[in-house]
Length: 188
Image (cartoon, rainbow, N blue to C red; front, side, top):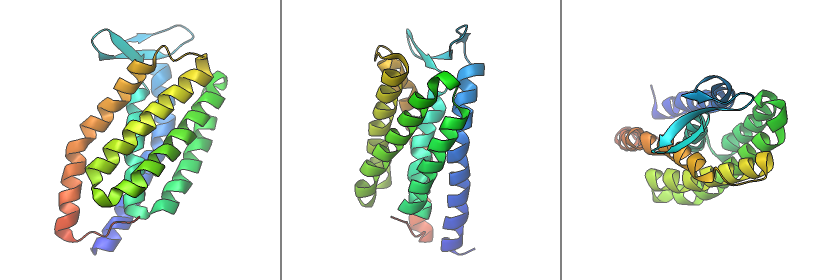
């Protein structure tokens, strides 16, 4: 298999994973957690004494996968994925959270793209970490403000999403080394 064909196949797989994150996050929030609040989200511990809605893990993963969509397929595929993701967010979000969920997804992924794009030539890990941090802060702040008019739970949201970014770093490091070894082309 040529490196270019491998890049496209991996890109489509990452794109599928990215789009699956949106319904998965909404399902987790309503169904999986150590505590499920009646008429509210299911929560998971993200740090000692801090809990966040369980969907934060998948949202953190989505930020990393968006970067990989761009790395494998290019900026225009990443923009298309963001638009599709925003539509899916509007479809799968609970009715009371459609605006907050859709706006948070759209703005955070665009912020992620804006930071990742200029940094990607300096290094995959730097670009993913920096863009994900910006994206997860934007996602958390926009969602909480629009959904609840408060940033009271900002820290648990940020920590929960950051866990997935941190857990992805060994895989990203391996991917970067493998790409260099096989001469995998990188899209911008």
